[in-house]
Length: 225
Image 1 (cartoon, one colour):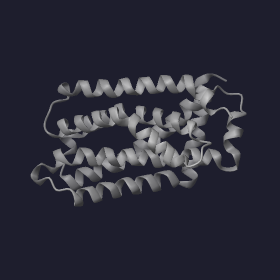
Image 2 (cartoon, one colour):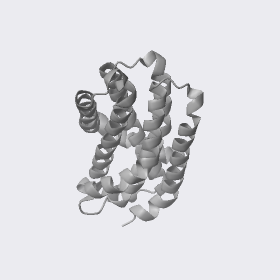
Image 3 (cartoon, rainbow, N blue to C red):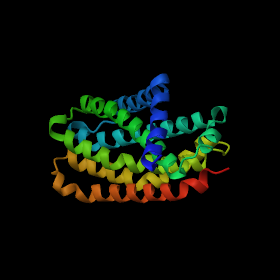
Image 4 (cartoon, rainbow, N blue to C red):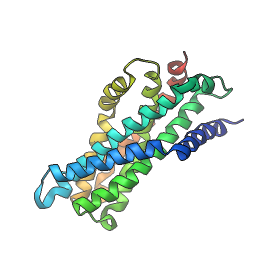
């Protein structure tokens, strides 16, 4: 069985479990939308709220939803010692990392598909004008968030107070890509053309490449008992 096939099977397993339960998308999606609604009601930026407030609200919702997704993803592996069963399979450890990370990307993408339209509605943002730019920011930021979260989720899988440890480790590491996403989204909604935002895209892509490469190389030693 090739490496890609191994990664695909791990990804398909996570997706199939989610299709049966709907737990991840229900909890993280509801939480993310709630953050957006509360943010729209709590922070007033006048007629420029879509520029001053909306970018932070979107990415705060995505960041906290990612912690929920990652926490529950690894909790499933701990239940009934499923992680030991996964590690006993004759598949490459890097393929497990890739499959798990792809699953997180898929789940976070579904959350973003909820968050962005709700934000556009509440902050009067035209998706016709800004939809492509928002899509590009999501495409550039999400792989890095998923890779970093999967790597450190594996590291904390067997620790006590794992949810607190995961959040404490993740958020400082995600600061570069989240700051780039917030600043770039603010410039986009402020009317900047996509050509002027390439530096933000480059920073998020570099972050994604670094953590994906690190995860593929380090996942095995971190996950082994």
